[in-house]
Image (tube, rainbow, N blue to C red; front, side, top):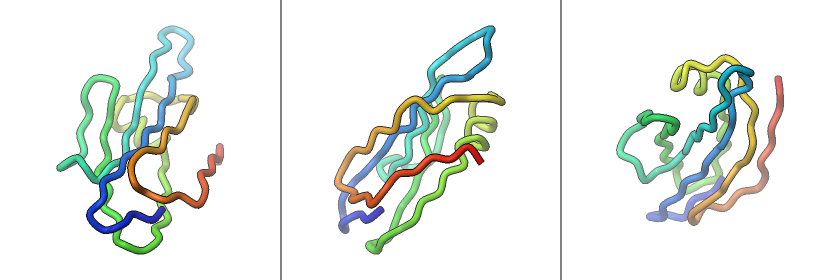
Amino acid sequence: MLLPPGKQFNFHLDFTNTDERDINTYRVSVTNIAKDGKTVASRHTVKFSPNTKWALLCIHLGDIVKQAFKIDSHQLNSIQLCGYAHYRGVYTSDV
């Protein structure tokens, strides 16, 4: 990910829990716009401030989901890239 100096970005990871009793949709947002990370209802914000060079960002969604929403199993539904950042690739893995 490359962010031009002074520009803002955010991207969103939307997922559902895979609990058969209660299926809900949640969102994790990574941004440099927020002042700090916070969780409100079904949304969690992660503050990330990259420098002006290419940055490799690895997100362990399982840990974030478990800490922010107290969910053990989930399924990633979509990734939305926003703002002025440049991306070389987005990859997912189940390991």
